[in-house]
Image (cartoon, each protein chain N blue to C red):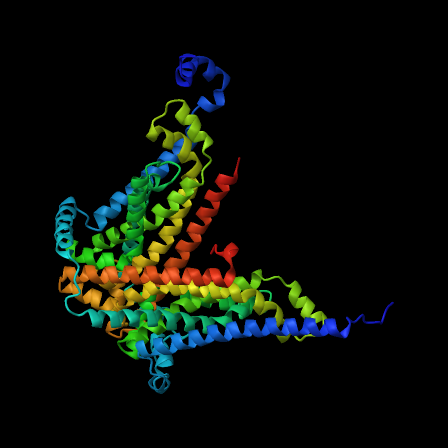
Length: 294
Length: 287
């Protein structure tokens, strides 16, 4: 019958409402408690972080000022000359950017080679000895937990200023990060080819070459490319601690308040990072496509 | 049967070759591409080593130095400044927490603005996305340096640096969460007479909130790591002491500080992964 609302009997209705109300109240209490904890944490953090909102509000106009200073003097009348003046040191910067890319490349390459060698020792399906697996995994963990910039600081002391400590710091961090990912890839392979190779009497290296590698190669390459993207960003700041690349120019420009230099170098870095991201994304899609093809 | 599969196969090698020709022929084109790629990669690496002044001599002496450094690191010792270091560790955690929360609060509305299903205007969507890309393209250390210039040395610059660099990431992640949300609850709210704003509150936010909360927690974890290093450029936290002790070559203190950082990061990881599980349930931990 249209137009008629069916209602529950009042006592049932009352019961349902009170149960609903209790459930909502319990949920609200839990949320309020969580919020209270969060607020307490924020207050504590505010004290520890020396946040002074009054001072902040008083100096808030510095942000737009800083950004305005970053912008170069450009005019339509002689746009070309203005841009040339903005990027006055372009040759040098491009050379440093190329160095930065080389640092990222070498760091990724060395790290990936190291990760390739270690990952088979950290994979549960190929390394039956618990002790070796434990050591390999802890080693990889150590390599990726210590920030690369800390390694760079240490290596600058040991190897001297220049790109070499930067490359080695990146390589160690990459080794840790990629080693874990590679080992996970290896753990997910189909074991039948491995059993087949073992059955024909293949030794360890032969097994990895003929049974494991064909299954994991495209994934390995894809992860390494992803890591290269990340390493380009990191290589750009390695110069902050004297480990080579464009970061050295940037840190000088920022510290000495060469505003337009800062914006020019930042633009170059952002553009490079974006181009690298696009290129590696294309490459990775092709690699994944290769894997899907039967 | 005394002979192994291998011996059997080897005896019948000619037959196997004849029967499975496709397996035994070499794909020269593929091999050539692979070889060419390898040669290019190695050549580029060789050029890089030359251009960046690598030398075996430097490597050897550096490794010797590192061995010496490591031998001086044991036993790690706080050098009598443990309270100071604990305080800056607390400062580091504060930077990570406040930076992450500030970024999340600022990025929350942006996440909706950058989502295709909330703002169908493609230009607004595109513009917001590109701005977020630029913000994300700048490393947190660069932000830290810039904010040290703007607000002076100290942890406040660190908070702003973390907030700025995560704002870009959160904006992108939140907008993806919003786009992935199921639109049917929203249609239901509108059909029962709700306004679009009510649809946002009662249909969209309950769906995206757990995702967003778990992402914020995940980034809090990763920011604890970032906050330990931004002190290197003067933006507060334990990194300042770490850089200082490395410069004055107090290796036992350096080892102590690194250990402190590793333990703090491990504890935060543990707490935050427990909280993430509590918020979104066991099934959806994959990030």
